[in-house]
Length: 420
Image (tube, rainbow, N blue to C red):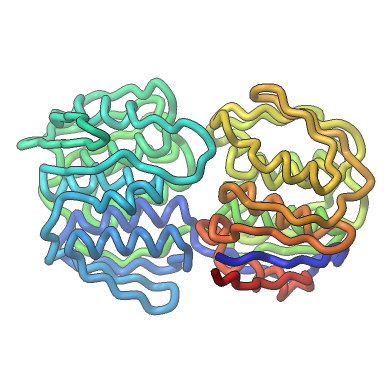
């Protein structure tokens, strides 16, 4: 257990090289078990969720070695098809092992996944799709028992463009007999990154990042070396840090095209942006104006993962903003904590109305999930006085040493370990 102690009202100025993407690296790590050969994953961020994913891999019998931001996985020792129940409960993304294990073992046992308490994230789309591929799925006493003597390609339409379901279909069908077509597929950049990784292993995937994906089954996958894409959510968070503190921030080693919805919203608020080939610069010296209306949507819409951090910025903008959360029904858990800091926010169902205030005030607040925790850090950076953000283990799930990155740019923030 640890906390962040923040002294606010210090402009954030400098450059931050953005870490590898959490939402890309986790399915990529899961996919490494689909070959007996070594897979070398570069630009792998140092995160709690990565640590847990490595534990899952080791529990399945893989040899995993880490050196800095490089992880090497050797799957020739795979000896189990069941993911540890404790780890499944701690990490929602563990469900992505289902498709990977089925491809390698034709048999998989997993308990229902956990993760941040931001609302229901049912896996019915995953299981429906796997059944279309010929997988026998039984759900008993909180466990999923999946078996497929042969996986056969199929035409699959997703009722909702679920990222996890799209990834599981890709993983389960890369060595299937025949061709699999996924319509209404998720279009997130992380989907395309997973496809590039799988193709580097010998898969044949076309259309990833578009609404229709075609997967032609191959007989076998092989090892590879691959560099994970940069994290667009982390990049957006640090841009907001520059804007909310009236600073001057550049995020480097990014793919600006993946951040268009957020950059458009910042530009609408009056934040001067300079977009380069692999960088985005923001100047937040002028007080920003409110946004009339933001609604979270699947990519390329406004990302649900940046809704919470963006709300901290809206809380100190001139005017009234309306936010509608369309992805998760319980993603306003940060609101009460922002209100403790002086924010004027009213929530009714999926809608939040934010009236900008002159300034926020330091307080002791508690992170209740990953992105909400980042929102509280951003609020603390601009608040008058001292802010303590508790439960930093949530933030560590998706941000690599956030306090160090911000400190290098002038923030007065430090981590304090809490020992019981």
